[in-house]
Length: 170
Image 1 (cartoon, rainbow, N blue to C red):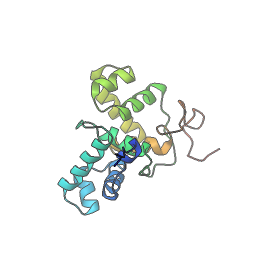
Image 2: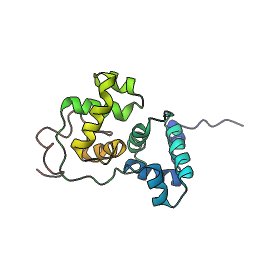
Image 3: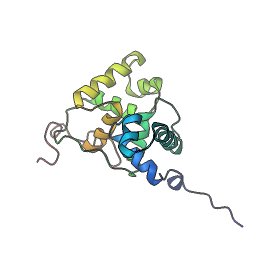
Image 4: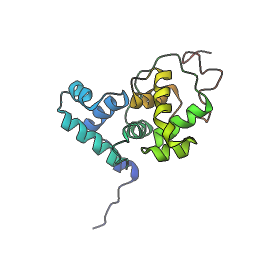
């Protein structure tokens, strides 16, 4: 009997319950808010968040935003609804946003964003405020909805010309 080795895609497939939890996660819900919304205990919701992280090899407790990015990149959940007006972000803001989406730990975020570790959290809070996100994880969901993150995006998308226009405006 041959052993069938699963593909990386198969190993990262979320269960239906994990997809529901991931939908709450990318919308920025806390564990207690998501649990209440889905009618499950906070412990069950948290176990699903941990399982999602494990599937994408994100085991850090600080990796909530990286988990959200991973499930959005895998296209297993859709980004949350976003305001039609896309915020204008600088190149430095985009570099920080991409680092924050990719790395769960502050030293790695700082290195990838080219900023001091001591500045990481304050700069992320600034991005949350500037974009109107509810929190850091919601920021990742909105960034996917606006095209700042995700497969097929360009280094500058959305372009500087369209960055302050509503999505879909010419």
